[in-house]
Amino acid sequence: MTCRLPLIAATLACAACTNADNSDQTNSINENTAPADEGEVALMSPSGEQVGSVAYLQEPSGMQLRISVEGLAPGVHAVHLHTTGSCKAPDFSSAGGHWNPMGKEHGRDNPDGAHLGDLANMNVGDDGTGAATYIVAGVTYAGVEPAFSDGDGTALVIHEAADDYVTDPTGDAGGRAACAVLAEPA
Image (cartoon, rainbow, N blue to C red; front, side):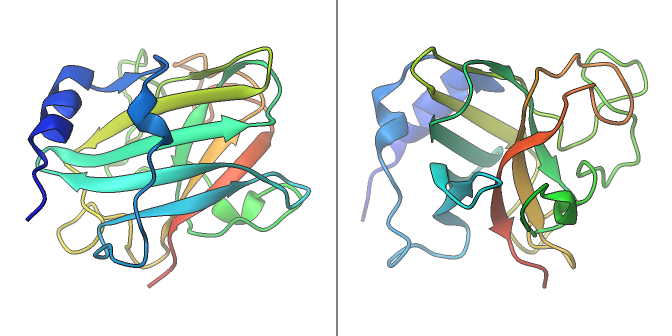
């Protein structure tokens, strides 16, 4: 039996997200032995290169997402969950719009928001690397809704620019710089 107390304690300390350089963010979850509600998927660029990974883990409070990137443009980037579990190049438009099962407007600073898929911006250093951890509260991988593995799946998209946290429907975040399928369409 694996003890997850340190992970749970770290998750609670995390609250919603952190961009700190955390050494545990480089640890990967072994897909070969993981149940369906934990795993790790490749984060791909529009040109088909792997530019990082997204590890996901079901926690009591929701889904924990740990993103690690290498080779993205330096700066602040929006991170969003998108409606469809598809990342077709070159523009990842197959991922659809932001994941919004509650019918809200975009942005944590929007009085009528936010989409469930609106995550905090992530910082990418001058060397093109970055890491961020998010908790998507109340979400499951499968089963109880809202779930990543709903009828059309869910993708995680990193955008070219920062999210302004208010402009509906996209946060004025620019094009899609990287994409990972968290759950394929059911």
